[in-house]
Length: 162
Image 1 (spheres, rainbow, N blue to C red):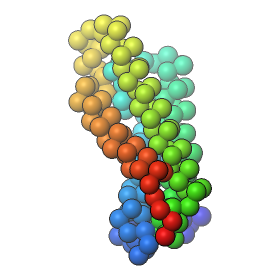
Image 2: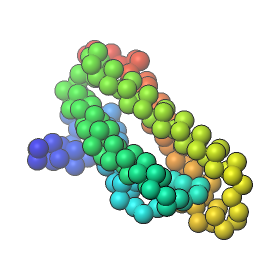
Image 3: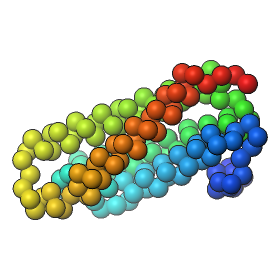
Image 4: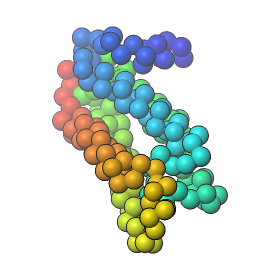
């Protein structure tokens, strides 16, 4: 409820047990809310080489965004709470970290696949100019995503019970 939002919003407030990892999970939670919202409510995909206005592409874009906001972000908040209580080494939270890592890997894999499929269509200069951020946005987004994946994977495999 309201207390959970206050906890997530208090970026400078970390428990002794949670520390910087708790802050990381809070920032990850807010990033999912913002990025998911951008996909759910923007008329253009925030990460597209060719922006399509077909109902199917709009549906997939919106479904991804709403999934990030209403499924990924709440799972990340569970990890905020686990970090606050020093419980990340528990089996449930390790599995949740691994599940989020797998979801991110799947999203990244589909991003690379769709980029390759889109470029195989040989888009012209005007279509590439209308892309959402172009190649720099694409490379930047994947680089950040891979680093986030690494943290979740590490926590899922290595976190110890305190």
